[in-house]
Length: 376
Image (cartoon, rainbow, N blue to C red):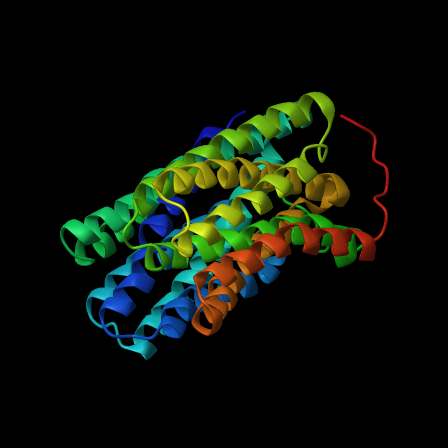
């Protein structure tokens, strides 16, 4: 278990700084007179550079190690947040978001891969669940806190706090152990199609998540959205750790259809709320349902990716999972924002409800059958 607490703390701090800014940057753009398309596109650009970085991460981790890449990621994600104080012009916010996305891509892959390297196989479900707890807890605080601070004061303290919180992750980074070096090229390159299903499964849930975190505050301005985001993150925490504990006992992947179903069903009341056909009670209930489902999906998809990849390709499994998560978040923010601009927010959330179960099913049908691996 040596090094795992530091890895959990680092991920929580990094995601805390990320979560503070996630709903605030699009809102700040809208307040400055920017279009809905621009407000959604900054998250899409952030996630685009995140995904491009994640593609290169298995090689970077083999070359420089987990600790060095995590330190670099913290430096690229945190301090550039201060540049938002200088300008909210379109070119500036897009460029800053691109740089921060590189840092986020480094942190997301290296943190989950490090947990996969350090955790004993018999505790892998709970170790990844604890990682999810740290991330979800920081999001539970960061998402509503960023909005609340912006509403009470301004966006300025949010940008400063985001830089400070993420930079604080460096303290944990220096306490990480050195992991064993692997060969420059692992034996046998794992085909992407082997990891297609878990990557698409978490990506489908992330599409809905990206749409909610970026658009919900704009879609239902008269309801307690900060509270709903906090409830969503708390429910994600419960769902992710609970799924990890069950996976250690019964095997990974068994709860994945349940998680996808809960996340899809939850998008229906969100659509009704955006259409003024439901109120605060439905908002909180939908947040609980979606958070539980998405938490289950996150942990189950990561464990399935680790199992399919095998111990030699933990970095590739982590990269595939994170690519699915972050590409889905960026695509959800951008595509659902475009749907909202064309047809309204109820239509955007209804589209998400259809995509969450459909995309993983198509990926399962298109991908290869899973190669059996001995249980550990």
